[in-house]
Amino acid sequence: MRMGNNTRWAFRVTTALLFFSLAGLAWAQVPKEKPTSSRIEKKTYDFKDAGKEMEYALFVPSKYDKDKKAPLIVALHGLGGNPQQMMRSQGLTDLAEKYGYIVVAPMGYNSSGWYGAQGPGGGFGGAGAGGGFRTAPGTILSSRAQQTLKLTDEQKKQIEELQKDVDVRVQKILTEEQNKQLKDMKDTAGRGLGGGLGGGQDNPKNLGELSEKDVMNVLQIVRKDFNIDDKRVYLIGHSMGGAGTWHLGTKYPDIWAGLAPIAPAAFGQPKDLDKLKDIPVIVVQGDADTLVKPEGTRRWVDKLKDLKITYEYEEIAGADHGSVITKGMPKIFEFFEKQNKKDDKDK
Image 1: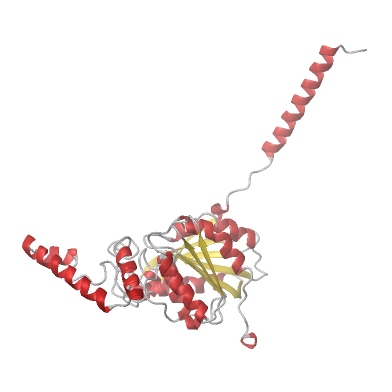
Image 2: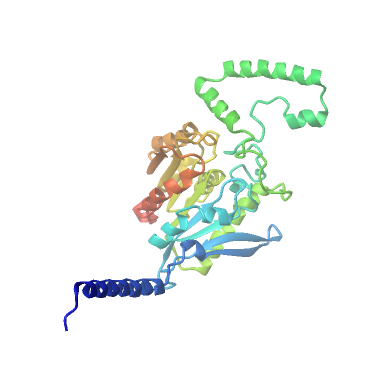
């Protein structure tokens, strides 16, 4: 039996439609992979020193095997942030899944504790070691002080004139480089990095101490609950968390296999970096960042160079204070993949 041209054409079309329909059905039946963010857990523990339950976020990659040692990243959020926010930084859990890292993000007691970077009592935007400033440095009377003292308009005017005179005198005393640093501090004062964002009313006098302890407690919990490779424990942090990375990295150098400060809000002079002689560091900064300016970050990088510490510096074109996290994350993982903590005999 022969088929005419029209019949043959109809047969071919019907066969093709049937093929694609079956193929589509088969494709539809293939389960779609869940995003890696679906594996993020919200955890709590009893923070006895603080007398309260403390939140942290945890990511465990799907390929984790309790019989094999896994690398760990401790991730510190920025001012006003929280563990979930940091953990959901675009690319973090995707890359952790790809390379097999467990990631934990502590709260740091509250959203503005500075992880001890401003000293035991520092936090909530107060001026302190390595931190930011709520009021611009060199201010005679802050606006809050003037309001509290209920200054008259005439008094405010006199204070303003006195402030101008003081600024001129200070500028003459300082070197050109010191004046640049002072300008950076004034530019960032009160803009969130050193201001009073976050934290609510829960700001104890030892906030900095509690913030630091929270990080170390969470690290201890994860090392107890999982088979962590002690030679591959890394610390990263953004903005306030970057300052915390410098602080905790230099205070506990025996723990870390690598550090990654991202747009670190550390506005003072570089300090204690000599303690990082055996810890490789990757510093990530956006050249379009107006909150943490590249000039300030470069001072810390220059100190790493002077001390002959192993480091990489990634200054990302067009990246601002927020986008630098996503744009820099692949470089951080690539860097960490090359770093293992050395044994004492290898140092």
